[in-house]
Length: 172
Image (cartoon, rainbow, N blue to C red; front, side, top):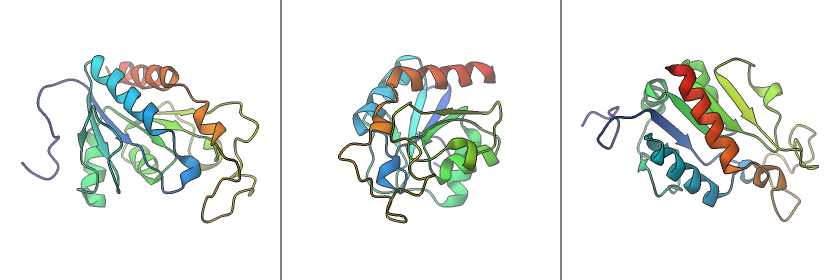
């Protein structure tokens, strides 16, 4: 298999997931990522996870730790939709022209990303949201002063799934 070939077999829309931003304050809970992947697979999607460290998803093929930046860009360009928390791969996905659903809590999407039909940013109304943008975090560690990341936990799986499916429908 060439290093840029999509893993798994079968057809279906390709959804690439990047579930691990480098800063803990930007992490959507692992259980929600797994539930999202399961929902997308039930909708006929081919879900592939990318990133570094340990894989988060159970209902997906994993390329975690197995791609160079160049290979990652190729996978991002081949996906119908990329979904992730605020991270470099989201910027790269938009740069290669792929539709993106981004989950934001500590950071403001409007300060970091260009508003475009290709991009759906999701956040909550949590009081603590956008703390990174207000310089309230212990930058650069990204350590959240709260015991829970309410800003990330407030984004529902159904909201993210609906946004991914809406972006996917726009591709067709």
